[in-house]
Each structure stands twice: as C-alpha cells, then as structure tokens.
Image (cartoon, rainbow, N blue to C red; front, side, top):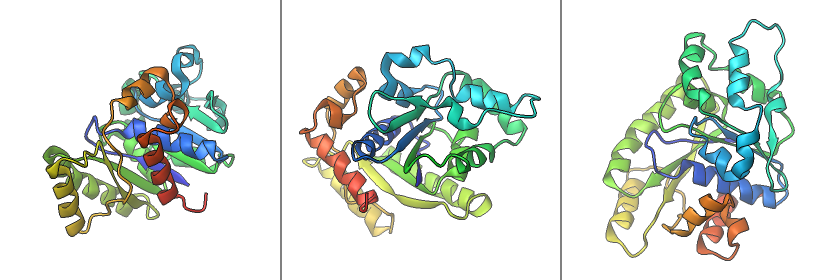
Length: 256
C-alpha cells in the first residue's frame, strides 16, 4: 500500500503524521518505507536525526540522474537509508529538490516515481510525505499512490483550503491515476474542550467529507518528539498521542 500524506496548506502536520504512522507499522513488523519529497526534509530529519547530514545519496540524486544522458540509472532502492528503527527505511530529501522541480516538470518526468516504485517490492507499507504545494513532487506522489491521507487543522483557513485540495486530488485521479482514492481526512491538533473544532468536524461530515474517526490531539509533546528524532511510540509509548497514532494506523490497516 502506498499512501501519500498531502495538504497544500503548510503547518497541518503532514510530516508528523507520515512519520508516526510509518513508525507504528514498522514496530508491528511491517516492512515500511518513508519517502520524503519535501525539500525542507522534515520527515528525513525526524527519522534519521543527525545521520541525515552524512547521507551521500538522497532523492535529489535520484531525480537529478533522470535529467542526465546516462542510458542506465540506479534503481530507486539504491537511495534507501536504514533508520535507527527496525523495519523502517527512508528515502531522504535534501534542499536541492526545490531547484530540480522545474527542470523535471519541463521534461515531463511526473510518471518516473511511479515507475520506480513499481519495481520496489520489498515493502508492505510506503508513506509519502509531500511539500505544502501542488508542485511536481506532489503530483508525482499522487500519481504513484494508491491512496491519499489529508491532514486537517480545525480552523476556518484549513477548511477553505480543503475544498480546493479535494478538487486537486479529483483532477489527478481523472487525468493520471484512476486507482487513487481519498482514504480519509485526519483531524489533527484536535482540542476536545473547544467548541469550534467539534463544530467544524460535524459540518464537514454533514457535507459528506470522509472524516476519519481517529483524531490526533494537540500536544506540546510532539515538539520533544521532533527534537529528539523519536516518533511518539518510541519517545513515550504510554502517551495519549502514541495511542492516537496507533488507533489511526489500526483504522487504516485493520489487518496489519
């Protein structure tokens, strides 16, 4: 299963959700790969920590090779990095992705990620983290994915962005990937005691949007998780957020 975590709005928790779901699956023995397509490399840093600074090969090298004149290129598996966590590997990003995207788009390389992943059979679960924009890399991810998870912050700005996002996914499905489906909207930074989040969720459900029944709470603990490069189930297995990420994973993958 290839899942892309996508939202055109920044700060909604894409990297956090992708990495923590990947960590839960890996801890259950699932062979898991996290693909980081965001030039900010937040997911790569989250799972690799300081080891990211010593990586000689990243996804930028893979995409750069596609622009060259070589007849034969390394398979995408050559760029995989083992994380400190069992069963969890990373295809890391680096800032050069940003400068490569326009060259790749002009050469119409959007199907290359799907072609590469079709040859990569070693994993049970693949999570793809994307930039906060509908750019070349996000389109490539949606074309390559089986499903799309959409993080949602409980505020009016996120709600407005959500409608445009759903239309973008529908367009990609229509034009490029008939198998793509929206697996669900993940409510993030949820505050149960506040009135507005609950009201927004109920309004979106009334409109028929696929709100998942596993919410992720707002917590300062996630900052510590980022700082220590430890997903929540490794930082504090008994924390409420660890239980919530586990519940979300089980909702998405009940047989895993």
